[in-house]
Image 1 (tube, helix red, strand yellow):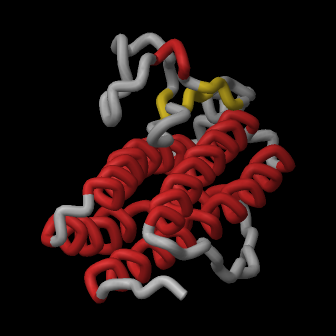
Image 2 (image 1 turned 180 degrees about the horizontal axis):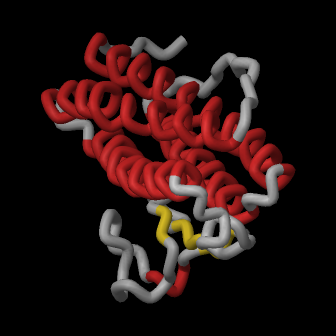
Length: 192
């Protein structure tokens, strides 16, 4: 049996919490996409599928970091409470905001103290991606509340997800590279 240092044990625990959060967010967003499609808000559904793919990338990055520390990633899936799309988007926004304000800053501080670059990279990529998700979910909430289902939230559309860090964008051609990890925008994956 491999002995794990106290420092690595702390990193593993932080990564497992983040892994579980991202894995559950992926499942939640896929469920929310189905509800949005049922309400004819296909653009909002497209966003949920793109965010779900991004969360999958975050979870995979966290799992890889956990494995490098000598442990396999595992988590418990929580049941998803699907409501109407407005409530679902507010729920998604709240979850993203919690990660931005609380979860990732705390675990990043700990990782930086221990200079664990793999863990730092995984957390920074996720944190910056969550900021993009929060902006997009806030936009959906505002459009639904304004009764603007004839805007982009009504028609299925593509979102673009960085395959390295999960950054999500409405367009592929804003810059030449991902603003988070500098991956070429040409490599971004289209999600509808």
